[in-house]
Length: 137
Image (cartoon, rainbow, N blue to C red; front, top):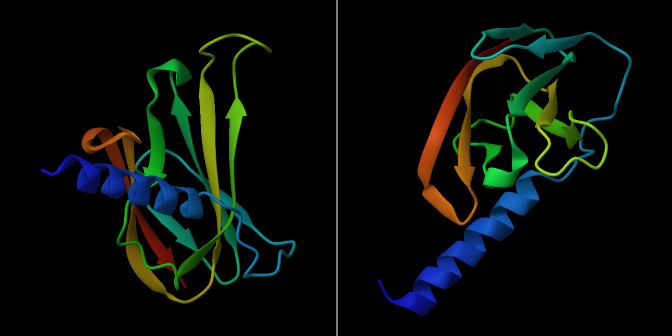
């Protein structure tokens, strides 16, 4: 593969990944039910409930991150918050982190939300993945 083209593709991938991790405010925040999903669980929520998915990174120093794979129908649930929390001691190098995605149910339906664990500079090398079956009533 042509190196400049490869670097362009990698830059495009990184930029598109950055857009996915931004907080979106399309759906107004309301007080309602929040469901926390464990690894690989089915998620069933009602309109306009919110739900969180939390993934623990054992060590942040490996460069691996969890991210939502393409193909998820964002009309069913919209991302309203994304954050990373450090779970180790304050100032500890390579401390474990927890990535948290918060979604609001937006439309009735069912879809699969898949998270993949990879290094952003090697997107084709997926280390792990987990799927959630989301049902919005």
